[in-house]
Image 1 (cartoon, one colour):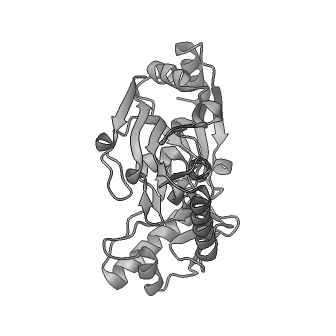
Image 2: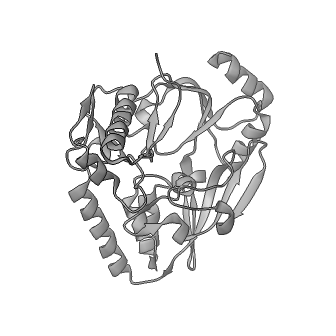
Length: 307
């Protein structure tokens, strides 16, 4: 099925869609690595109701991929078949405070969530300042940093399944564990409710400044990178294993293992997605040979590989 015919079918099945539909849309500019092929169809829904209408009308056989800020993501060079959904705008990008509760759309950057909580004098969410992603990604992978994790503060998440039906998930139903949630894969999260605790605004903001300073001192945040590449193995640190395997500064095409923090891969300029993913696989191979430890990707890799 061509991109054009897929869009035609979608518009025929859901003529009242209010969101934006684009065909053969480049995704490279939507990822922090600035690499990757196009989306066959890219859909940006107007709001939750628009998303539900779209999913209910979409042919079940059409694959659906969701992307957020693109920070922890490699889109492969062959692009993404089917429909790619990217949430944004006021409908998915608002944050509301109600007492100790914070409700945020899943397009809200984690850093903004931390800032809003701090301004309201709510403690417990400052760790989100150190996560370069959005609330949706935090829900899906139990994102964490600087001693805190999403599981520590989440009350409830809301999402829509492939049938266009809205579901709410309690903390227990999210099934959180290290960098993982067992919530159904076919659910697209639209919002989440977190609980903070009363605190001193100045102290919370000072903590966030410490988080920011620590990131800037230790991580290549000014580079085109995807954040932490591999999950820490149980009882260890991925970067230490990578360093011990002699991978610091290792280069493949336009991609490099960061000299500053070797659990980060960077696009030095002109890298392809294949360069970056291939470099990651070479790091995994060398770590396996030198330490016997199997590193697991933390960065999500999606799309079609090119020959």
